Amino acid sequence: MNTKSLSEAARDIKPYRPAPPIREIVKGQDMCVLKLNSNENLFLSRKQVQEVLLEAAYETDPRIYPQDEEQQLRQQIAKLNKIESDQVMITTGGDQLIELLFSLLSPGDSVTAVSPTFSMYPRAAKQRGVKLVEAMLDPDFSLNPEKTLELAKGSALLVICNPNNPTGNQFPRESVIKLIEGFDGLVLLDEAYQEYSEYSLAELVSEYDNLVILRTFSKAYGLAGLRLGYCIACEALVSTLREKYMMPYPVSNLILRAGIKMIEQAPTVLEAVMEAKQERAWLTSELNKVPGVEAFSSDACFVLFKTEKPITGVYEALLSQGIIVSRQTVFGTEYLRVTVAPRKLGERFIEALREATR
Ligand SMILES: Cc1ncc(COP(=O)(O)O)c(C=O)c1O
Image 1 (tube, rainbow, N blue to C red):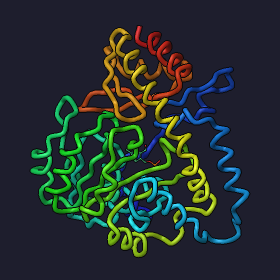
Image 2: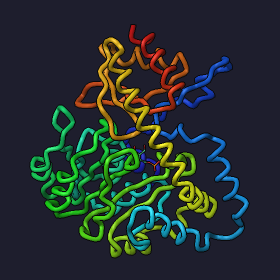
Image 3: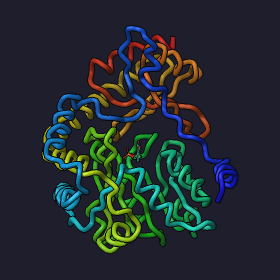
Image 4: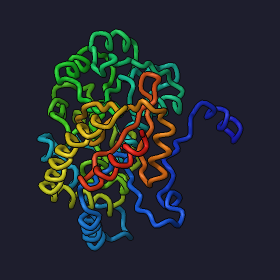
């Protein structure tokens, strides 16, 4: 490997370019930027979460490697999800699990992803040089398990994002179980938005040894900036991944402790989730009242919508008013995705969108 071969191998990998940083958008103007592009939890106050972090900092000795914080966090996660702690592995955000599972594939393998979906799966496939088969949802975003299994035949990994990003819908439980039962290889079930949805399949990891579930503290648990996630799978798989394929200290003792403290705040998190669900209903209905806008129902903390006006103009007009949303391509057409936010912020967004689509 040298610099030239590395950059040649990376030719097809699109750089991940998040929206411009808030400071760049403000450009010295007197403007409060509304960041609604990454599905973060704006229902928990910054102060609440900062206090958790401060407490964690006071209890942490940064001079030494993590001790038993990881075990404590795994136990709490297990209790929360009604599973065993040896069915839990801690990761640096959910993204690390995606990277890890794809890194276990060999060139020549293929991966099937129920699509359109989260952009990190195609990216990970490109990084690994494996083929990605896109098992397309029906035009109304529904999942056809039989068709998906047919397309996934021969793949080493099947990825299902549930609720799906960016469409927002959660697939019927029986359909997902059909996929897990009918697929020969590993199934990565991405439940990053589970807390906002109707169900989780976490308890099924004892039953299905090919099921690997991704979860994160970045969404409902309000810790996106700290990069903390976890994997739920059967004991054998967790012990292999954790003891053989992970580096020993993927997450710092400070962040592990913050995770422990955040789980202690689970009732507050749940309250914030309940509020977000109410605001999701309000936002979807308000979006559909805006002329030329069609919004889709969601089981996550964001809503996907399309506009009659070209998306670029709408996106730019929102940005000029200090509102960042996310551009998404679904079945070859551009859509926008907006994070559900507390009412005042939601109202500001709807007002700006009315202006932008006029
Ligand atoms: C579907 C899905 N999975 C995984 C992730 C990764 O989350 P994180 O790495 O912040 O835990 C995201 C982030 O937006 C996501 O939308």
